[in-house]
Image (cartoon, rainbow, N blue to C red; front, side, top):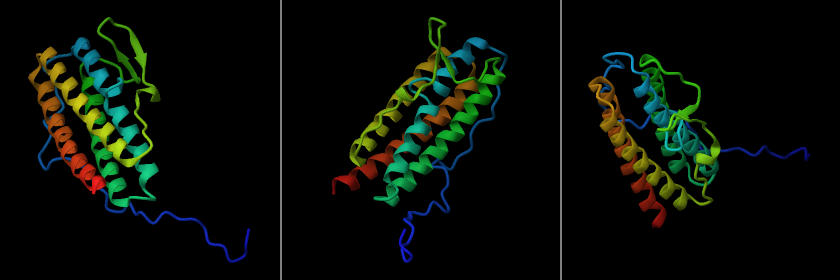
Length: 184
C-alpha cells in the first residue's frame, strides 16, 4: 500500500434518518381473543414472499448498492426500510398475542409451512428498476393486507393492518417521486 494513499470512503451520511411513516399513531396491539388461525394468516405478512421481512431486506440491499451513487435515494430507501421494521415488529407482536409463533415460517392456506428465503426478493441492477420493483412490492403488500383484513374478523387486528396500509401507500408516493427524479 502506498504511504500517501487514502482509504476509500462513502460520503453518504445516514445521520438523522427517521422511519418513513405517516404522522399518526398506530392502534394498540391487541386482539379480542387468541386465534391461531389469524396468527397463521399474519405470518405471511410477517415473513412470506410478500412480507415486511422481504421488504426490509430488499430496501436495505438496494440502499447499500445505491448509497455511493445517489445518497438522497439511498437515504429514502433506508427510511422506508425502518418503517417496514416497525411494521414487522407490530406483526410479530400480534402473531404472538394471537397464539402463533414468530419463527420465519409463513403458513400457506393449505397449512404447509414455508421458510423465508432471499429468493423472495427482486434484486435489479439499476436504480430505476429497483424503484419499479419496490413500488410493485408495496402494491402487492397492500393487496395482501386487504385480502387478510377480509379473512380476519377481529377489529383490533384489522385496525393495525389498515394503519400499516396507510404507510405502504405513503411509501408508494415517495418511491414514485424518486422514480420521476431518475427519469429526468
